[in-house]
Length: 344
Image (cartoon, rainbow, N blue to C red):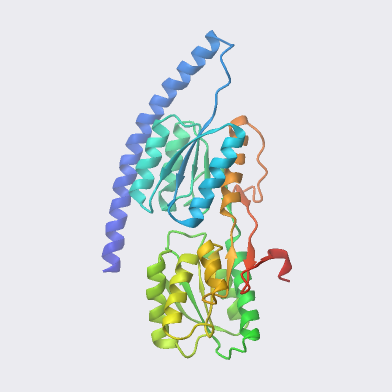
């Protein structure tokens, strides 16, 4: 069944890509004509006012706290810089992602900012935008290997490693004897976010722990709950810690652990720093989360977009990959933050 679903998914993506290419050819022609007309107007009237830039912002799902905060960062910083923003919500849908970006480009945006639900579609989206003369700034999730102008991220592997170090601290503090740990993973397409689990696994296995389960829950709270129930069916009495690659899944896992009467006995660590996760930590349902700063990620994306539009130099943390990193930090079982540099 999984193989059949993958085949069907592949066919859908292929058809979407085909339609996308047709769109891109039409848009490229339209944009070229518009650019020629704009040039003619400028030549005829050199006193024309300076153009106000417009960002097309396509967000993974603005109903999620993390991405809602990211969008607030985009809108606030753009307002400070006098930049217009046209927003689009992908609603966790590949089809919405593609059709929405197509619409944004058709509206004559100057730069595309996107937190992609499905990074696998990014190469086609990037190609479409480039043909229309539009720079592309990706904020979080992944680029799918696309040629983009900037990628705003946190260091996910380092964040997972931090979660692993904190897990060892919790195990010692709470005198937990089990040598078993589990990981609840985000969707396969979120390649960058999956590095969180890799970092966690690296630390735990080096310290003599066994990763007895790695289950994908697709960034969904209910699926995280079901994944944790599955893990508990075998390891309820022999599990030290579970690490979820995002907070929504961690909240689901924490609920399952609480229902099983194992609250405070099996440690739960998430990733993102969502307000709901912080509340769960304060209530003892979770023991920590690795906090990203989505508001700052969105604001930084706008700063980079502004620099690209003005022809200014962008300072990358990784020049080859065009990556810019935003700091992460630990929120421990007190519900209070510890800076990343404090955990040595």
